[in-house]
Amino acid sequence: MFVHRPDARLFSLSFGQGPLTLVALGGWIGSGELWSEVVGHLPDWRCVTFDHRGSGASTHTSSPITVAAQVDDLLAVMDAQGVQRCILGAESAGVGIALEAALRAPERFDGLVLVGGSWGRPPDGAFDRFIASLEADYESALGAFVDNCLPEPGSDDLRRWGRHILRRAPLPHAVELLRCRNQLTAQDRLADIALPTLVVHGELDQISPVAASGKLAAGLPDAQLHVLPGLGHVPIVTAPAQVARLIRHRFAPDGVAATAGVHRT
Image (cartoon, rainbow, N blue to C red):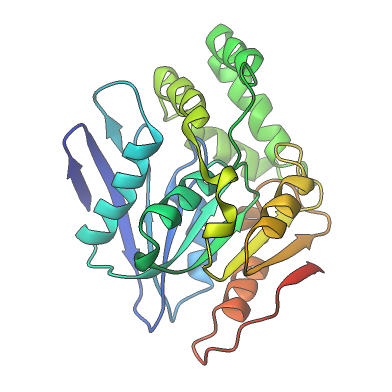
């Protein structure tokens, strides 16, 4: 379905039925499609994905893209899909948006699943070199980015798929989605996010260091960190069954939740 916003049209899909609902966000310009294999391993859950504005099949008609608008979009998709409360999943840059949403509307969420998080407010100029490479040769810069996201041996098919997903985002939107990250505030307010949280990070992540998720988990009151050996930036793509097992374990229907801490799985 498409969810119509004043300046955007958001593409969203819903899968399955069950006692728990996962709403999942993609990363920088990665669409909700990145969660498709994790969704396949949760057949007894309801799962909702969507492409955030400027990515995938979603459109964006006015500038600039803001963090506030992305949180508004998430809540609008939940309303349109009839989701009153959910476990909110996010990967990469989507983690920052998930944290902002948890701060704004904590009553809408039962927990968080944060994967490969690039979540903090970047220093001034942090993305200048990357943006310059995108503007110089968008196709090549995206290809190099995808290669760094997927360092695992034997991932050639996944890299081709990843390039296909990312190149659907127009260059101006890709740049805006990077620049708006200076609007993130959650790094200063992690202690206010009391939701039970699963933090997952690939040990070989070349995009966001493992230490970023370590700092995130340490700052959240009820977080459990799992570091996955041998995996890169997108374990939701390279190890979806493992991620789905961790989600089940953390948010089991019988209410049994694993204790907070750091785990190498």
